[in-house]
Structures are given as C-alpha cells and as structure tokens.
Image 1 (cartoon, rainbow, N blue to C red):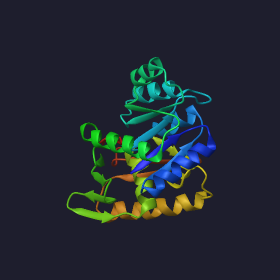
Image 2: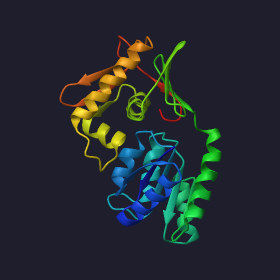
Image 3: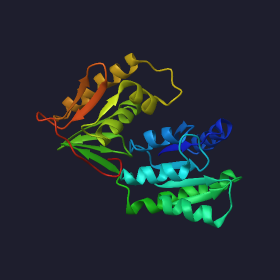
Length: 235
C-alpha cells in the first residue's frame, strides 16, 4: 500500500514515514500544500495523510482541490486544533477522517485500518488503460490472456503512466514519484526502466505504448490513435 504524507514539520514527517514503513507501507513525503496537490492528483496513492497547517496551501484547500479533480483517495487529516468547527471544516472539505495531534503510533494505524476497510466502496484493485490491466496487489500486467510480473520500479512507473493515460509526465516528476522526492536517481535510471516496461508491454501483445515526448517526459497512449482512458481508483 502506497501512502502520501503531506506534513511541513520535517521531523514529524520522517517519524510518520518510519512508523508506516515499519508496518509495511510504501511512503512518499512532501512538505507544503501545493506539493500535496501535485502529488495527490497523480492518483497513485491508497491513502493521503494531510496536515492542516501547511505553507502555500492549507490542508483544507488541498483536500478541496483534490476532490474537485475527482481524486477519491481517502484523506486522513492531521490537526493540532481540537475545535469542533475545524473538524467539521476538514470533513466538509473532503477529508474522510481526522486525528488531533499529538497521537500515538497505535492510534495512527487504527485510523489507517479503518480507512482502508472503507475503501471497498471506492477503491479498485486494478487500473485498466487501453487493453492493459495492472493488478495493484500482485504487480502483474495483463493484456487479454497474456500476463507478466513487473519489478517494483516497473510497477511504480506503470501505475503512474497508466493511471493518467494521455497525460505527459515529466522525467523529473516520474523520478520523484517512482523513486521518492529525496532520491538521487537520474534520468538514465528512468530511461532504463521505461525501456524494461516497454518490452513487457510488447511481450503481452498490447497495442498500447509509452511515448517519449522529447525534452519533456513520457506519455501512455492506448494505441495507434494515441487515445486512452483509464478506469479504477488510481485513474
């Protein structure tokens, strides 16, 4: 499960990431509201943990922006304010749940378990784009009767590109999302894994393709006409 933590207190963000990673989650952390919107709108996360007091855009604004973009990812709002009005504002902004700081690791995990149990109403376990289906649990890519397993990085890249078919994803954004915002991965790493993924897409007989947009990045296209539409929660 992939979680986005949006928290401007770097030490707290790191502590949250450690707790989550110790419990088997994959975590990305960003430290301002605009980055929360940019990352959250990619649709690749299973839960977003969102602080209220953020620079550039507060948590209420982030939640509203994501919901306007039809991002249905469950949002757990973190607030240092215990006022009922703030909680109501957060829920009305589109958050699914809230926790008041300070909180214990056990409380955090309980809230996440509750959120993921609710996902049955809104979350699909696959992304379908063109003639390809990506299983989010097994990391298997399928086209018709053919299927192939992806490595973790191939899966991360496929999830980003298939989740936003037709959209151009810059090389920098792809590296940040697939390797993490603090990664030292280079453009050569991205190019290598794009090449691996293309070969696997060809292997299963798909008509889809990953296009290179020169000097910009990459785009997933369904087939010869370049059109694509994804279905599933991550779309």
